[in-house]
Amino acid sequence: MKTFFKIFLIAVISFVILIIAIFAYVIIKNPFGLGGVVETSILKQDVTENLEKYKDYDHPLLTEEQEAMVIEAGLDIEQIPTEITSEQVQCGIDKLGQDRINEIIAGSEPTPFEVVKILPCVNAN
Image (cartoon, rainbow, N blue to C red; front, side, top):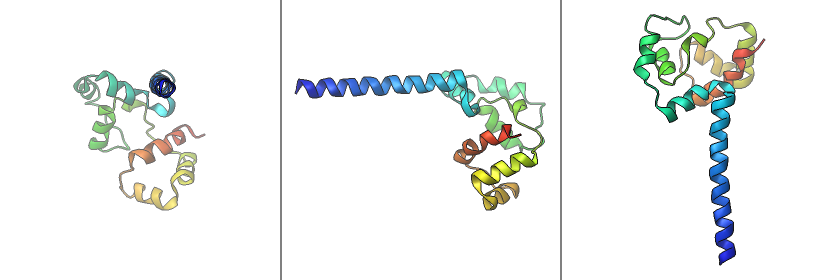
């Protein structure tokens, strides 16, 4: 019985260390630009300050609602590209398919999973 508890305790401690390591990696390395989201979720940054900071900025590709969602997520709205290149479109088609890209272009909102999936396309050259 002692062996079972030792194994269980080691597994739980390993799991906690793994979760902490993943959050540290996301905050420090910022893969896919998600570091701001995690920092906002964990540190509870003041969203009203960010809204005030960007109140005069109008991103040409986003609606006001989308801009507010990006700001509330803790991301820098000025870092989002203002033009979409043909390479970025092709990358999006490769990741999501032509039909879904056409729906998004027509005004459909991408899901959070789709956003994460196409984030590497932002830096497509």
